[in-house]
Image 1 (tube, rainbow over the protein chains, first blue to last red):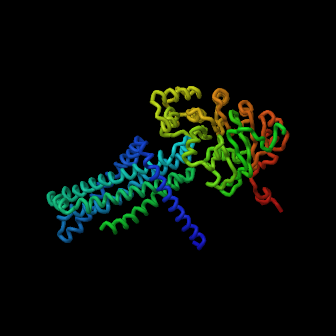
Image 2: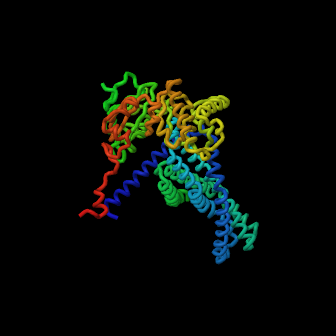
Image 3: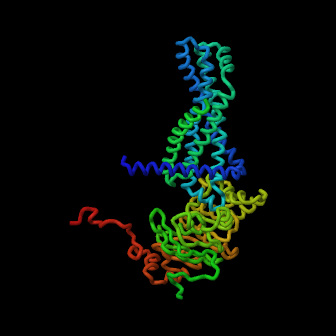
Length: 255
Length: 280
């Protein structure tokens, strides 16, 4: 890559970041107006939240099961299998729950939001709204953004619940860890504020950035089938990078 | 001044006034000093070769492209308001008085036909449901699609979608309606109905109409005035019949459908024989 190409690439990246920041401000300004479209917000919560339940719950269950298997093996080396419930719960609440839910959300709901808004742009529906003096940021973007921020922590809670259930299934039912020890150690060690609420903060932050990336990519998608496909891919790629970067920063500050 | 002319005939109180418009999009010059007036209560057709900026002109009139925001200079006034100087709120207030018929209808795919037509009413008024229903059914009846109120946009043919979009565009009885290629894909019956509707709206409600079209026969039936645009400039204007009879190179090529003339049929390219490898 020569210097000129590298500089253009860098400048484009900075310009995109700036545009995304301004777009975020537009959404914040439009949020009060978008509350008028309460039905649309509910519909979007259903669309991005409820429709993601199957993938989030199934994955949550399997992640919990795998976690219990791996941890049981490791803990058994040190004779510490009694701590299985605690370690499974802490891993899920503090790290895996928010991060994996956000990655799944980006793949399931983020791409759907990008494709939907991108197609609305390509078929002139966004322009039609502008022409009918309806602000598309307030009617199309802000409700989807709000729905993403609301849905993400709720999905994470279900992911965690199913994960612990999966861990219990493997640890207690299959591998024979004592039921009372599993739950007792978990409830005595896990702290509501330090562990669970920190995870909720992370989840809220992930909801905010993933949905922002999704709506921004959709709104600015080139009005062609290739353009929409490219924007959808960018949603997943950028979301994955940003989720892990934000996770690192938040973990550094929260622990 | 002759009836058919390439320079602007000033009109006392035009509803739309375009002056010295220069537009450059993606490095390409679209308008190079375009000026024209659209009289109140008239049906004005904008014609010209493909890619000459007819739809772009509509986007200027609605403020989607504005001087100061884009690579645009010159002035566009609608009902006396300078579009470039309007705040977003003022622009939206003006757009409530303008109907726009998109080339591809642009119906909202989440809604059925009824809800598409009701959409502007629901967004801008607090009218009771019964009144919204009456207004929507009246507009759908006008375009002959009252019976299709419960269909979704995916169940409509192209022509039906265009008529639903027209019902939506007139739901507020606007002062100005912009039609972007309203006749494309319509069967003769629907085309007749749309022509009649444009004429009726113009005559009974005094709605000013600007239509971008290529169909000279249809334009002759409905338009009071035609502006012919090419190469970023106004090249001819006048009543449709006069323009069709005019013997300028522009009108002869455009209305006669000739490949040779001031508008090249071929996109600029290197020599054909050289490119095929036949040249010595």
